[in-house]
Each structure stands twice: as C-alpha cells, then as structure tokens.
Length: 279
Image 1 (cartoon, helix red, strand yellow):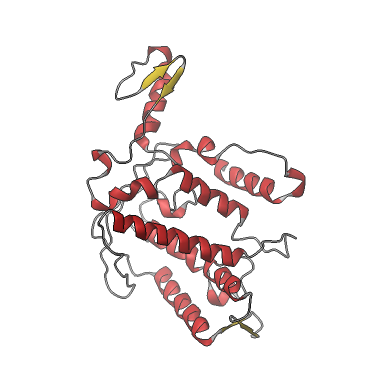
Image 2: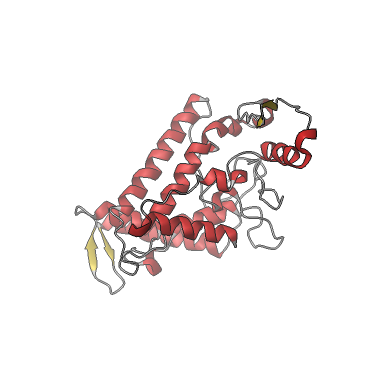
C-alpha cells in the first residue's frame, strides 16, 4: 500500500531525531490528485501521453518546455451550487497541505509513552486548530451570504447540502459526491457517536473524566483542555479511549461514507476520510 508507506515514512521522519535534517517532498507533489481537481489531472495525463504532439487547448499554455495548467475554483463549473462558492477555501491546496502536515506532526494513534515521544499539548492544539478552522469557515460563509451553519441531529432526518469534490484517485476512480438533500443513515456508528457525545458532554458538565481504572481527573486544572482535546480526537493518550471513544474519526467516517453507509457497493472513501482532503 503506497499510501500507507508514504504516511508511515513521513511520520517517522518528522518524529525521529536522527531524521531531523531530512527534507521530504510536499504532499501535493507526491499525491497531486488529492489536491487539485480532476480536470487538471486529466490535462496533465494528456500532456504526458502525447508529449510534443500535445496541442495546448483550454487555457493550457507552454513556456519553453514547461506546461502551465490553470485551476480555477471560482469558475462557473464549480459554482452551480451555493456551497461551492466556498471551494476556494475548503479545497485550498495550502490549507489541505497544512492539515496533512498537522496530522503527521501529531499522529492521533500514537501513545507518547509507548513510542517514547512527547506530543506537547496535542489535545489543546487539536481543539485550537479545529476551533480556528471552524471560525474561518463561518466567516467565509457569511462573506458569501450563505448564512449560518444549520444544526444537525442524528435522531431526526436532517437533509445535507450537496457536494461534488471534483477529485479522483490515482486509479481513476472518482471521489463520491453527496447528493443534495440526502440524510445520514442510522447505523451502529451513529449510535456510537451519540453515546460518545453524551459521555463527553457529561464530563464537561461534571468537570472531571474517568480514567481506565475508574479514577477521577479534573478538567478544571491547567491540563484540562489537553485532556478534553485528546478525548474528542480519540488519541493514543486519551484518558479512557474505550469509554470516550474516538468521535472525531467516527464522524469523518460516517459523513464521508454517507452515500454507502453499509459498504455494499464498494464506493471509494470520501474526502472527509482523508487528512489530505478533509478540510
């Protein structure tokens, strides 16, 4: 699995002291198809296949031996649905690259004691990063007159906004789109999410959490926000992963695979299921 290799190699280089001087290529250079739309990738394939016989069309131009392929996220093709007005933000190459690097710097699965690593304030930084991303997204929505984010309920059928990522995998399979008005199917995963949400809410209200051995740890101390962030992300350092779960990963899976919730039709993973495309 080449994706697993690239991820493991990148995490190892970023975490190991003896790899500190290594410089890895940017993720959008390794996997450009996860960062630019399929129209650009298709043109790049055509240029590669046809070589010097390629006729520059559709705004593609050549300078010396270099081809330039524009990628316009604000053109009419990408703004047929109001939500697509925000594609310049949600599909920004730099923002998605940041999200990729962040999850390599702070791999959620790693237990600091087991791997002898120090993730300084990982939970706090996770909480802060998600808060800032949501705040910026909210501002972009308001700037484009899209209004506030509508509340979502797992117990009532809440229609979701449609979304077409315009991305495809290296093997040519398209990233699944989300039809307008579809709802999340009730499943074991949604039950888990509701259980974990309730337990986390209770912990916040009570001001303490339960460890694996039943001990109480206060959330009102200096490390409280770090503990809370670790719980929500479900990291290897969570005080009680079995009880508080990994709600962040579960939600990305449920919404990312909403078009095939029971995995009956071999639908490819959605954009929310990849760190490279999850913003």
